[in-house]
Amino acid sequence: MICNLEVAGMSATADTLITAKRISGNEPDSRPQMVNWGTYFKVITGIALGYFAYRVYMQKYAFSVGLDSFEPEFAVFWMRLLYAQIAVAVLTLIGVVVYLWQTRERSPDSVPPEVELSRYFKWITWLASYTLVVFITGAFGAESDAAWHQVVIRDTDFTPTHIGLFYLCIPALIITGVGSFLYARTRLPMHTNKAFVALVIAIGGPILIMPMVGYNEWAHTFFYAEEVFSAPVHWGFSILGLALLGLGGVIIHIVARMKELIDEVAARA
Image 1: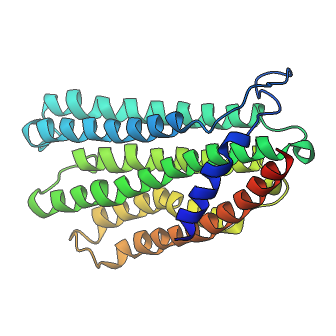
Image 2: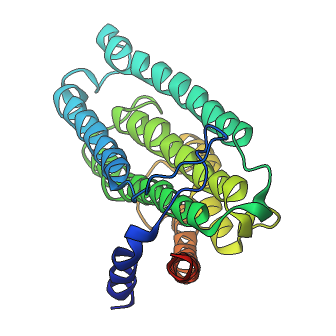
Image 3: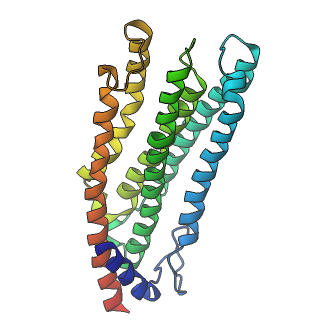
């Protein structure tokens, strides 16, 4: 109900939003700047379609050319994909970090409430992207990998499901998580000089799953071959996944701060 009331309040005052400056320039923009939900839905749809296409690829090639890592076809259809994913992930992460830092807000104390409010909407897009990637990683990536281990005896750590989970889903999680954190630190005045604990927990926990993957694969290779869900080598995934509960604090902060900004903008209209 709180969210519904908040959305109603945002809709009622959306016509009062005016962007004081263009982020890309110094000239004032006198035209009303409505919330650009188109960007939000494009980003979410793009992520969903990208993972759907990857899932179709796995459906077609995982069992046909993904069972024997010594076959030449495995190197063509899966190892090349692995190398491409690693390269794209590294370059994308570097690009996101550099861009967000180079375009950071230089005078956070002078940001008008209209601009800050519009940035909160953009931050929601970052957080929604991160949340969607986390959901896909857990609901589809991890479950498909678990199902694979129940029916296939692997001869390599780079199985088709591992390539999709550990080298696509988790890097995407890191990119969207780091992007969400840096966007808040570089553009929102309340977060420029301090770390938001709830956000750090919600993003830091899942990101630490990546080094946990290395330990998990080492353990399965040397002393624990069984893929039992409740095995001690898997406990770290559950513990770090619980860090997502920090998103509750992030949501409460966003709703409270956006309400304050909407009231300020409405009062000045």
